[in-house]
Image 1 (cartoon, rainbow, N blue to C red):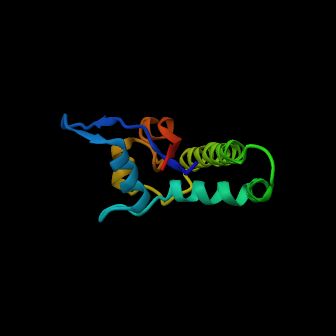
Image 2: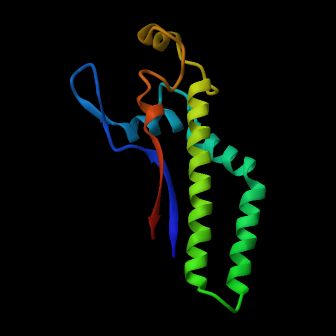
Length: 143
């Protein structure tokens, strides 16, 4: 019954102009936390925070349901608790991914540097060809 929600990106590699590849997770981490030359663009953090803020009533109801099931004296508690847990984690996962994608689409992070704009040909942080946007995912894993 112990599960965890994983928010991240698909396990793919991005081909670089020099022919080498970089894992998408590394590019996402550089964007999220920043580098020596680029500011942080925390789309994942903002997406998770917004998902929790927007869904507080749902989360509260599921936690109350979880507690009530724990305290009940009848039924198959393990099965009921797993169902509640799956519903809660799936809902938070879907909403978080949607909010991360919205942050990426709307460009609501630090602006690109002039050199980056020139290189890309447009000014949209976290967006080059749509690969990051298309590969934001969630999963539920057993712990």
